[in-house]
Image (cartoon, rainbow, N blue to C red; front, side, top):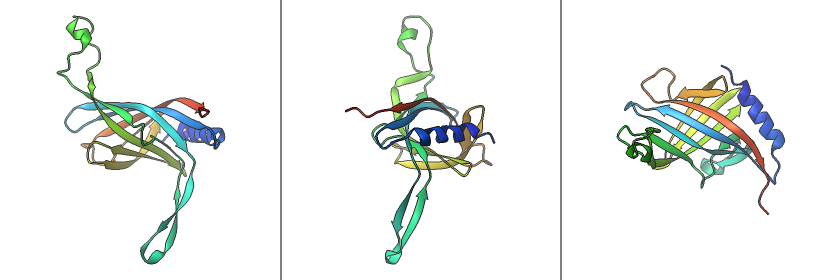
Length: 175
């Protein structure tokens, strides 16, 4: 498993992050679906340093829980997910030109996402906002700057996901 590029990304983010700036990366996600369709999603993930929170359990017992560093979508900035639609006729097709992409830009969905990294393990979480807020988690492997995985590494009938992270950025807040 080649996840050194992820370690490098998280090391860069940790060194670049200050209380007054935003460290971001662009996420590109492609998936196949059980129906034979495919999707892709694009958007920006924000870096969050690791932190420890306290969870109060039964009887008021308090338990510390470590949340590892992560890149995640902001609540109001979900990824935009596109679905292939073989019946989609775009403006280029109407004019007799290049058929363009088989994805209907008017039929999209919102997808929350996070990628965490701790002790050499990469975990991807996807939050399907319009599908009853369903959440899935899966460990990711890496090769050639691409992450890949699915919910169950032994069940290849489940959707597989490919992720690339590009366009590292450090942004100062708008004053």
